[in-house]
Image (tube, rainbow, N blue to C red; front, side):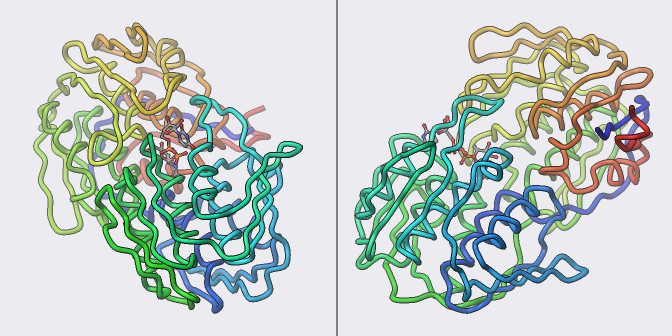
Length: 423
Ligand code: UD1
């Protein structure tokens, strides 16, 4: 299995270019199934989750073509199979996103029920509830969600918890329903807004994206479109934290600063000088050690749970004590034990981690457990004295494009060692 090896201690300096957003491209690729013409999606990041999504769509009969710039064309006209099997769903929970589009466009879907995962139970009850409200018949048999409908009917859906993929699934389905749907307590994440932009460019009529109420007027058909995916705000935030932790100066380009207000505010609290332009953000620590910060995760526009592990890592070497409270996912502190192996001083209390900054971490072999946790571990490796070896790198590859190259460009001493070399 591949590993990432890091020799910590170099202040990062320079520029890094941000890729397209993983959490936007996955629903957008899936949404192309709703059209009766091909669509082209650009600014697609080269990630394992994108490959998995393409495999899923390809198995269903969609024709896919990728050019050298990772522009993907999806032609859904020969779709013949409406099933997402366990072997794919278990590697990528976001496969659940095919449920709404399949039922809306083809009248049926079989999607393996995602099981538990490393960061908590993550149920899909709200996705099923929303589809039933739209008139689909939904049952769970033999580990599969089976959904059927003639034509979906517009309805008012009130989510009792804010759910990102739940909002996306129901929004996609409602586009082809008869009549108007209203989704209340909808997720307001920029990726939901990007998906709505994609759907509207296919001919959908969605209003209110970016607020907590979506109004979707169903249409008879959707066509094809050309669309460029928004920049990844979590990748953006991760490189900024790398700059903060290493007391460096990092500029991220091709980013979208307005999506990161909560993160930028917290970085300023660490003592960083933050400057933003239209599509770039610069962090400059002026050689100083960051001050610790308290954070509480919550749905957008509050502080994102997908940046929690990175800020936990930052607090481990910051001046003072920071309290990190996770309100979105239970059990999302898998990185804590690994950080402790590097010498971090962290105490878990309920859904909070109390992190007392230490002057120095020391390198050790550690294990990635989930996507964002592993980003936190790589960041810690950048400041630990000696060598840190991060195992199970496939978690990182699901969501970060060539992380070792991008950090290497900023001066980090980091390399990937392939499975054979690592053994
Ligand atoms: C998405 C993101 C993920 C991010 C998360 C929260 C994608 C592909 N993934 O995940 O990176 O960490 O949003 O910002 O976009 N819930 C229920 N019932 C449901 C659905 C969700 O109770 O049917 C709960 C979950 O257990 C969790 C909360 O709602 O406590 C939020 O989860 P949700 O927003 O659905 O996360 P995902 O969409 O899976």
